[in-house]
Image 1: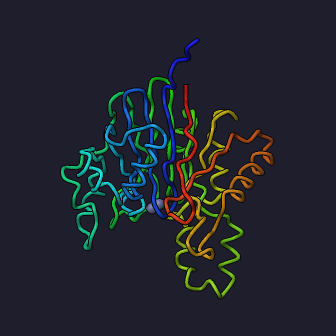
Image 2: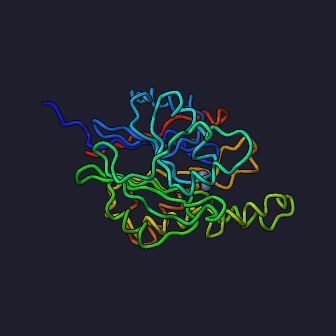
Image 3: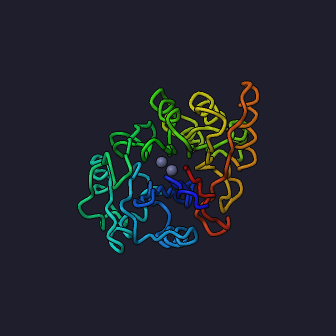
Length: 289
Ligand SMILES: [Zn+2]
Ligand SMILES: [Zn+2]
């Protein structure tokens, strides 16, 4: 007996402050959310999944931080992949000096409502600085009745994010730091140089902690079957003292919070950094049938 092919495939090719790229594909349309890791990593990790980067139909950019757009210029110049980005982000990146592959992005397109047979729902998030960086967004991507949502880099969440999760069959959500790790560093003079960054991470324009990630999942997930990729983990830096999280801690905190709420935790999966020392790889491919 032949099973029908999955309607949607969803995978974090790389995730974290060294570079982000998430692949979403139907049978006929293949897109990336962000291209912040070297182009070679994206091409190789797609190939390891049996997917061809040359067949990408578009790249959606979430915001004006290099770990989300770094390879966009290279991929569009080499492979002719269209880049979709909010005009405020394009303007912010064009204003910046220095070397950036963004200068190779010619004729970027505004964020679309559809690419091929994928519907694109844009979700505003609070993270990058609106005047210097422009808009910050996440996406829910749907195909027929199936949807996946990717949200990283959000300092806080609101009802629109909860509503997106309620419609989703799989979720990629940031679990950036463990609050007790951050608190310990903020009370330790040896980490004084990191304090500004740590305070920023914990703020409303920073990142979600493991507990905030759990709060959003508990509020939003439709049921305990919806798989979750824990993303943008602050782990496996080249210098261990920069780590504010690891996958074991993040997944334990999220599971414990579900259990404390009397709910069955969803299946959790890890994502991997782009950097070489962490022996990175693509995450599991979630197949939504
Ligand atoms: Zn980021
Ligand atoms: Zn960011």
